[in-house]
Length: 423
Image (cartoon, rainbow, N blue to C red; front, side, top):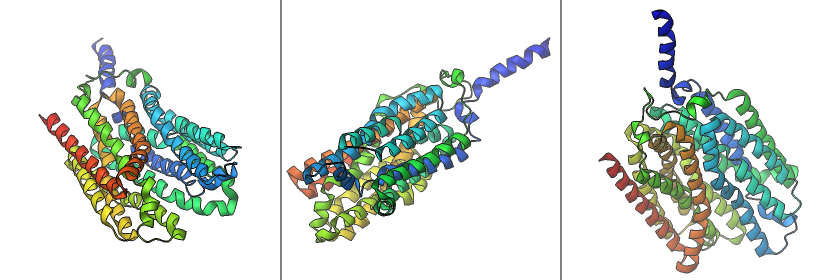
């Protein structure tokens, strides 16, 4: 009788001790590889239209130059606006139904929509499809949720840094692909090629990604589960959450604030009109190049020395790196400073993701990471608006001063929250 009772009792006691992260620790490396590839291909497909987007808008019947520029900006930003709206929803559903279904949904949805963009008949359909791509897609966001919740806590910063490197590489390579591919297969064919690339990522996600998810346990996991680490997760500090959201927004706000003035600013540095667009593209890509070089290393430093320290240091250093950009006399000097800025900016997202995992209960991690993705993409939308407004009213150089000041102020906020949380 004692033997018969002991086995169920032991099983019942052991089951809750295995958290989602504990059960999936054997899968996190293989899933990280697929997520890096999928994030790379989807972001290549989304960003490769930058060089030829105005040409496609003109092909769809828009003839006036000012209207072409306006519609190109609306079409490009629509995807990120859609992602900002739906990332929290997908994060919440990932907590409820599992991370892998969200990856599969994003990959299949983006593959279909990307191909449909190549069939657009007018600019309204183009904008609508780009918006839908953001609403139903978000493979990189879903990857952040999966990697952020599966990687061991002591390796989460490094893993998110590697994932960030893949996404940054996609944003860097995309415009280069978009500059060459239309000459071979046409503009519409380029969208079909993008859909095919994302389809390959979808197949890998379906057949290679593994997940041990139990809805009854993981969706309602008690925050006082025996053996679960991260005790602070069940005492959510609103100040910590708010600081993480603001910092996530600042990542892309800092990078994109220069976008509205970049061509005019480079023109003021003596670059000839015939080379302006190409030079502006190189300068914009430099920050992504710098981030690729340091994202994984800075994520590892967050694992070793603490995420708050890395966040504060990266914010202050990035803010300081913005200031000299206002005093350059040649475009290559601006490009070099943008590389430095990208190198310091790269430590933010892995560190933020690692802290987010600790800030809330495990059953709410996906939702929290979704809100961080939303804040991040909001920065991509708000950054150009702020940069354009400052450039118009206060001059081009003021964009760098104001953005740098915002970053340093955000660093002070992070330091205050760190000190408050440590008390």
